[in-house]
Image (tube, rainbow, N blue to C red; front, side, top):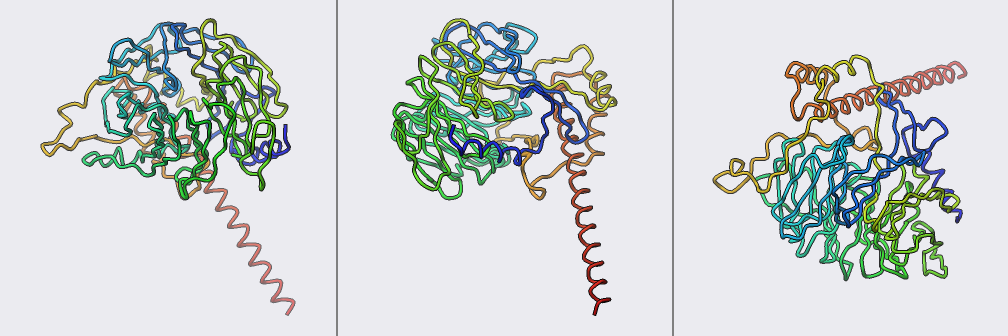
Length: 485
């Protein structure tokens, strides 16, 4: 592997705020805001054929629960929090279908039938919202717990092909068969319910349909990369527009950025995963073309999906040859192979499943609230906007908006949290109300907010201590200088 990739790995160790403990790169413990959690990573795989959903533990390679009755669309797989998997289904009719699976049942637990075929799906990290892209170019936004359709808008002239949230979940990025990449503000979509939805940015450099989009860190200052059937990947800045274009020998189906955004990994229809250098001062040339430094080539058919492990050291690829391969990005070697069963693979998703080892009082609250209904089901997704939400002037009442997840790499000034007292009071209110269809998701959201609030308190305490030490040192230094004079 070229040296720039090793530099990238060093950069990543300074970028991340979480410490990984133990010998396995995908099973670790972390301390965050006073809450200790044990995590493991699971690779989830789908096919366009009715071969179900396969799952494998990334660290051990052991096969998990196999879920049935799934014919997923490309980019039609997402995880709702840590409790449910959602997938858009390929149907023979003109109507759409979105199925939910829980981790403890092989059959779908919820079936929804939108008004038109839904292809790509995306959800925020807490599983509060799910977004779907229609074959007409319309984007739909639902609240998961209630199934309520919050918003829909005409986003593209042709079918939507991919949907991605920005790292801080303030933006939604869409790509479509019209070759356009659109950027939408989630805050404006949720808050300005009475007005039409306006895009924040639009990028029109591709001549053929968009196949994939990946977004880097930085929120509104992010870099995004789009791939297309026109054999190119384009690197865009949300501030300045097009940064560069990388041409490939084959159509690119899937793209991923390394943690430092030094390297672009591009899965192609010729079975190779090309690695492009995005940050070198000069163009590098290889047998594959400018800026492409090497290729990983163990797949025998088209590479359809790519995903990085949480620590950034392993790349997971899915292919039409029916295999999932795990690559070590430092050595460029394939270190593990999973077999889906039958049929090609069109989606690979890495899910972080957590076993909370949190404060005992919170654990007792969780058990008393949820009781035996630990996996209460959300409602099916509504087919249309509800008439009760429409005002006489045609505007729509969205209702209270649940705050989206904050970016863990954001600056101190860019975050806002509910007070610890408010959060604990809300948890106690849930305890008094008893179990409901949304109690588990609400509790998980509140616990997550509480953890971030405690982490912020600790960070401000550290900042205060640093300022105090600096001020004391400056005062003592001035006293010493005065004594010398």
